[in-house]
Image 1 (cartoon, rainbow, N blue to C red):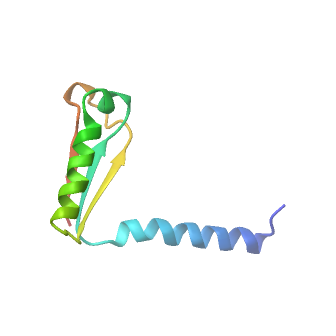
Image 2 (cartoon, rainbow, N blue to C red):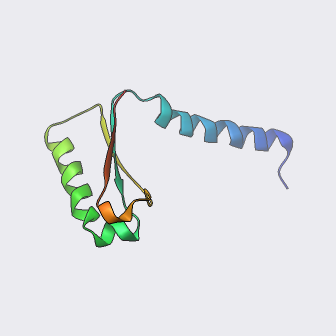
Length: 83
């Protein structure tokens, strides 16, 4: 069993990792990669976005994936979040 101090250390490390994602400036591009998105072609979309960001050396653009966005009939879905 972990002590309270050990649990607090785990909590702090976890929060630090979560906040890294929140505090980053720049554009975040998210591709829906649930089963519905994958079957509609989300994998090649994600791959193309990552390749293009790398090719253009876009330092302030993060491409990531998520699960179901909730409107499967419009897949593949890409959401763009700008600061």
